Image 1 (cartoon, helix red, strand yellow):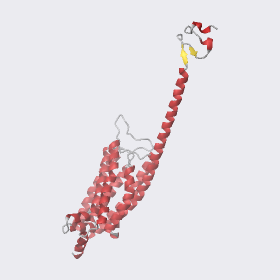
Image 2 (spheres, one colour; image 1 turned 120 degrees about the horizontal axis):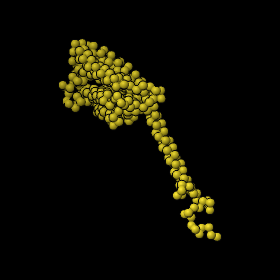
Image 3 (tube, helix red, strand yellow; image 1 turned 45 degrees about the horizontal axis):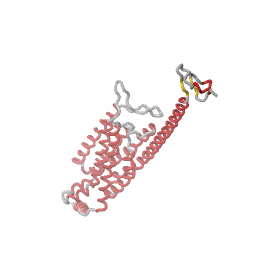
Image 4 (cartoon, one colour; image 1 turned 90 degrees about the horizontal axis):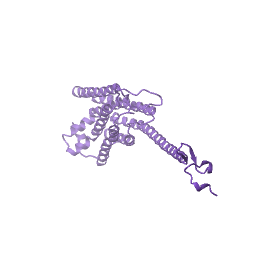
Length: 319
């Protein structure tokens, strides 16, 4: 009890600098996902986003959220809300809120991925650009399967966590560590399918570059903030964001390169089109110098008397 009281005393004296950083991170996490949500909705397509990237991202974020909820440190923070005021409770639970917002935002990506997945009809094939390797685009059945597995994983993880906390709270730390390890493994391989898909398409498709620009450095800042809050014992809660930040940085670099190449091709195509248009106008001017008489014969200006006809002035030959 003394330990719990001491922990609550710490929450009752919040570090305002850490609070400001944590609040900015919370807002940054939310804002960073908005470009991705907007891009899928605006394009009305999730083309270019790997189904396996979505599956691994959804399951890893679920494990991360469950991990921080079952951590003894987090549960102590929640328990202290009965002893401290509302502001101090809010400050103490910011770490949990950060992971919860990240989980919510990625779950929305999962739903948007399915809702705007390119579908085929009996008359129209699915809209997906051909990749240089000729790889077959993912099917709508795969998209449904990914969504169903992700939602089932959320349900099973929640039920198992509640069961452990209710009947075996003494192994909560071990369960949190298992969830943290699963999170790290899933998040570590999460970007591999997307890296492969983006490389094949030579395009980012519906993947948002602004989102990655915000999240790549943000992941490292977030990891540092969580490490300061839960310490080395809670390594399983923050090490994943170090790994994902590095992998997302690689995907960001690839995406920027392909976007640069695509814009370069468009500029070259525009210049080529302008040159072709200029050549066409030159040909039109050359043809326009030829006149056609009433009988269908061609008259070339400047050919002298041989080119005269009944429309030539009668006094034109007088000398």
